[in-house]
Length: 161
Image (cartoon, rainbow, N blue to C red; front, side):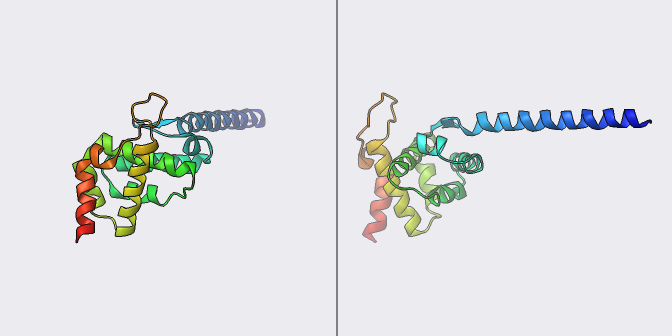
């Protein structure tokens, strides 16, 4: 192989590498900035205001929770929230309950500590009150005791002990 052929081969390899990296970044951009993951609507704060890696991990944790892996819920609880992001997290948590069912959700949260359970309950309450579960553009103003009676009873029984 002469030096011109080697230079051409290296150039082709560089071009190929740039194309692969560009396609990967484009895919990451499309994937990580969607406003939905596995049927769970994600609000503005968690869609736009996170970096790509945080967004990818966040979506992975939603998928874990939907697959009834309590580590997904635990990781979601560790996401720093305040103000609007608290409402969005509550909306996400309530959607997870709708998606997997109350019984499955209760089985997952049984493995959590009391602080985590308390946080989950608060998020679900907020998600039902201020979420838009029916996608009509308005807050639903739902109550946990009516919407998720099994979860309500589970938490009530914990406090009665």
